[in-house]
Length: 312
Image (cartoon, rainbow, N blue to C red; front, side, top):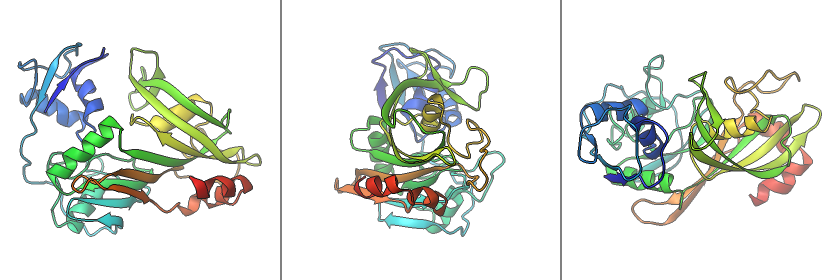
């Protein structure tokens, strides 16, 4: 594929491509650059090279090599499956793909068993079939590609955001004000803590847009159930945006703070509730909803929740 840089880009080649190619990890992109599968204006480049307006990036994805990950019989909650894709409800606490510290027991291991190895190879040996990801402690809807054709279509839909729609439920420490708003910032790597993302001043980072709406607020615990509609897909976007409004997610180990009220859930309270896209083969519109986890039940019982949830 070829990408033309048509707007000012701040940062390195590998970081720029990581924002464009959600299906590839940054380390995978760095490897492809070093092995000259990625060229800039027809010439080899280095991961740290700057990106300039007008640059033509040529990207060739090599054929998949045999997997190191082993199939494992890990239960999965499948919402839909056909010859092109699988849609599932990822459990909280499940890592998406093998990585240092998590060599097995991941979603990839489970998918290799469930699909009997029939997954797209574009994501490389570490991420077969993985089009997008959810953080370890986030639950909810994910779509996985079983063919390279489906993979390419889904990645395009995620990157262009024209047909892909993602709606999340979150519980915040603090009640966002105003109760309904759009957060539009740039998000980039935190200047000090490299495991964090942060709101940064443009032209740094990348544009990030989140619509949020308070569904129900609980003054007794100082928490709120919030519906978030993503218009972009930046790393930790909802977590960073609500933290920037002074309302970090309940149970967030990176951006949050300890809850003072006893009895509140301890997991990261973020759930990928709804996912809609066009089927990569038939073109038909598809919409999926992951059941709301029991940890959210105490907010669903608040009066305001009954007013909003059925119509969203």
